[in-house]
Length: 174
Image (cartoon, rainbow, N blue to C red; front, side):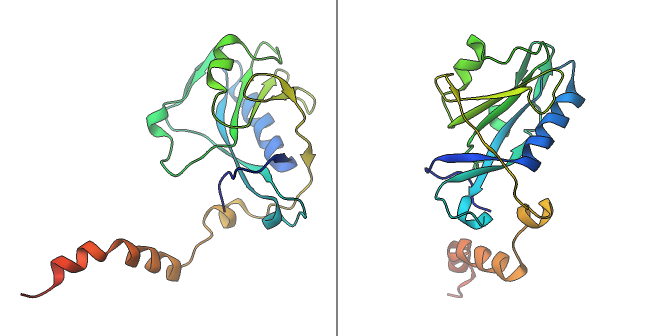
């Protein structure tokens, strides 16, 4: 899986949106928050160039209450470049607050989901907080574990080999 690229965000996978809506409903009355990740559209069988939001990364240690959610930035993986963020407004308001706008600087799309967390209870915004289109795309994403854990032992060995040049210097005999 490739993480976010510099191309346009083409949409959000329907399966991903369903996950978001369910997660927000389960977290109610507290806010829900996660980071959006995407895959290259061509790797998903689309002929367009760009990124499709396919995953939500829930950051360990995220704290939430009925009026806010806070991600511990030191828990965000070093290799993650997010396409944007998603969070809920348990009060149902589908527009960004001033606090939301302060967090919209990174990423290209930010989704706000409001109670009662139905199919039409969400909006997408750009980094300035302006509404933007985010089409819902019907795609077969397959098994999430296959997408996330898409490497084999040969690839692991090759990566470890790349990290070992310094180790080999210590292994040399005088």
